[in-house]
Image (cartoon, rainbow, N blue to C red; front, side, top):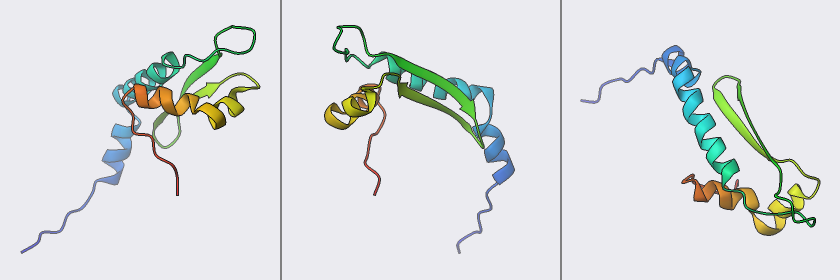
Length: 94
């Protein structure tokens, strides 16, 4: 006979906001940022900004901090390739 399973939502939320999980998320984001190897027209490395934050869970953002960044992602998949190289699964939404 199947047993009922009850998730401890408050406990799960506590784990997702913990310093340990935040550290793991920020390490993964830093790895993605370090894997960006594109350069801008001047030959300078493409600037990358990595920032950790907390909403309902620990999170981080990796941003191509250059006006050409959006186009580079659209044309070359700069962040997608960097995330994949960091061992993260990259899929399209849909």
